[in-house]
Length: 196
Image 1 (cartoon, rainbow, N blue to C red):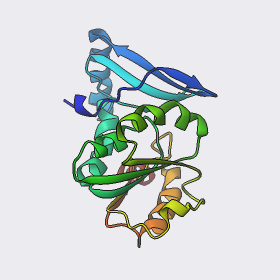
Image 2 (image 1 turned 120 degrees about the horizontal axis):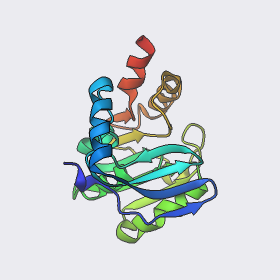
Image 3 (image 1 turned 135 degrees about the vertical axis):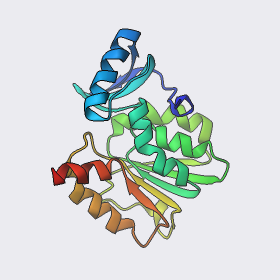
C-alpha cells in the first residue's frame, strides 16, 4: 500500500547509528494485527523493511505507520521545503519525487546519520537536495538566510511523547513567519498522550 515511500538504503553502521533491514513473516504479521487492534497502530504486513537505530533504540523505519505519520508533509510538499531531521530520508525522497518540488533542505544533528544516509540520495538529487549539519533548535545557516519555505517538516524525536511538545512549539515559532505550512512528526499523538 505504501511501497512507493519505502527507502532504498544500503545497510551500514557509523558510530552508534545503524541502517539495517528486517523481515516480517506471515506469523509475525498476524501478531502485529492483534497489537494494532488494541492500540490502533502497529500492524506490519509481511515484507522487508528498513530501520535506523541508535544503539538499541529504533529511531525510524519505513513501516506503514511511520509512512502514514509523514503523509501530511509529503502531500503538502512543493516549491522549497525544509525538513529538520534526516532519519532514513524517507520524507525528503518522497518530496523530491514530486516534479513541483524545486529544492529540499534537510538539517541533521548527527554527522554519523548524514554519512550513512545522505550519499545515497545525493547521487539522485544532488542539484535539489542540500543536507546541513547542525541543531535544528539553535543553529543558523547562511544557506537558509532569507529563504521562504513552502513546507517545513520537523522530525527530530525518537519517540511519540508529550515531552516533545515544547520543542515542537519552539520549532513552529522559529519558522512561523518563514513558511506557508509546517508540521511536526506525531504532534497530534503527542497532544493526545498528554490529555490521558
